Image 1 (tube, rainbow, N blue to C red):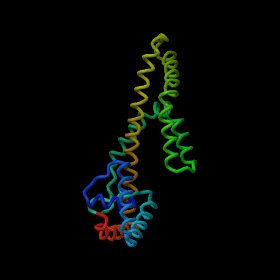
Image 2: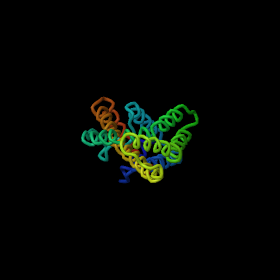
Image 3: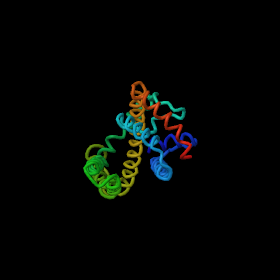
Image 4: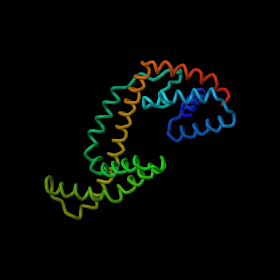
Length: 216
């Protein structure tokens, strides 16, 4: 269904720029198919989805001209890695442990994607409330011992500044991570484009396109 919703958005010239929009578009397609069943469309969409999933891809791998993306941006990937490397010391010490713990619990749960998101949200909420003040205290102690001696009364200001630094380092790290994952996504897409599976996928997509008028 996700592949069909992506193709339908291309046909309507609508850009699905967020995960929320993708989910809503997929639900919309599912409801339309239930109202107007089309076995050929459904079977082709399932087969196309299997090919994409086997390469760890989704409908975003398809260009507006019904071709498979095959131009990974190496410069963007490099800058993404540089950003992550620069932010990693603060990001890992301030948020790394709880993020890994949330990731582990989320992957272990059998309660579905909603429960996984809950674990991630809990980690995001407790980090600035509990972990960042503790980490700031450690930073303050190290700074006092190794760089410059400061009065304990300066700590509230130090805490406020360090919380902002942690927050923006995390945001920058995620931007760098997105740049790197975008590169990896297009790289996998390029491998698909050069394979027999890629040729089969394009054929399936063209067949799906001929049946999209029913859903518009």
